[in-house]
Image 1: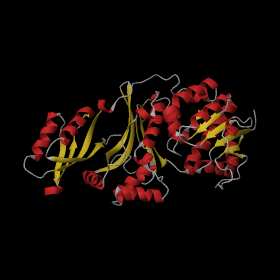
Image 2: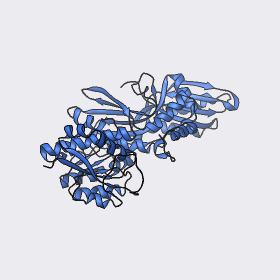
Image 3: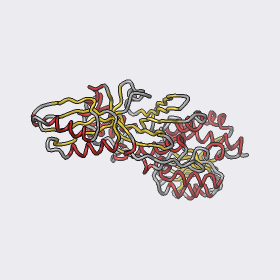
Image 4: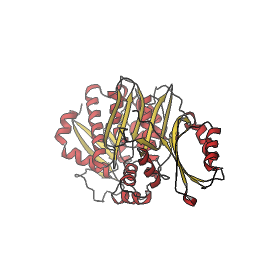
Length: 435
């Protein structure tokens, strides 16, 4: 076996540059832990002449094919993101007998089954710790540490941008627009923040976690998704008065033999383990049948944290090759879609939950009775209710008891049709305190 693991890198943005720096600065530690030297030998970038904040990079090329087909490359590190051309390049690398390390959450969420099947068929490895949670070792924790237990539920904050935004709204009284602007100024949010604010990023990560935790294929498109676009300062304030904080939560849970996966704003009690997760931090609360709750906290994005997971995968790959030639069959196909038992995915209508509602109403006699009648008609019980303001500014704040999702949504439609209800301003799920 060669005494060097030769890496061909696709893309060299923030994460790629951080990987190059880490492999250079920690070279002796990496070699000692991996058992071989880990070296970047080729890097495909759009503009080889562009200055980069990385250690000297060898053999910069414009064409990705010059990496995936190169004879002097053992493993392809895919860091370009997106679906295409990343999918095609990963498949080409595997066809050439090369293992792949990726941080591409969108690719795995939508094409995971295809890529896992191809890795098994070609006898190569596909590692992806950096795809979820940046530097948080959540994939390895589920795959290895909890392999002997049964994961029953994952509740997580998987997007640091939205967590920062909601923190600013909660602690600084910012509007959503102002908080997004602050996040952009700090580099947490892109110029177009819709992937974060709309919940798309968190949904892709939730799909990957559900896939490995429940041994079934969960595509990103199957994840119920709501973003934080409609969360207002009023909602944040009312949540605080009730003893809650608003977070964008990803929840994946086993319900009998089925699986439910959703991403949506939720009010959680101050006593909940995730309530104190602030700023741009991510956190994953995993509940095992036997081990109980286990929480991982850390930076879920950024060059250095994500590079830590990428380099960890490279070291794992090198160790696996040294001991068994390939680690795919022993470590990855076991939890991937290949060979996994298909489990039904529950629609949101099949779940139950508690909800907070903010209604803009006409301030006149009989309004509360009409609203209460609508709830009673749909057999949705009200836990708390009070009125804020008078006249044209009258608002009703309600918290429901648990009710079937389908029934609750029908109740909301009825409320929107009442003459006394000017607007259903907000609907936010309330998560229980139990972890």
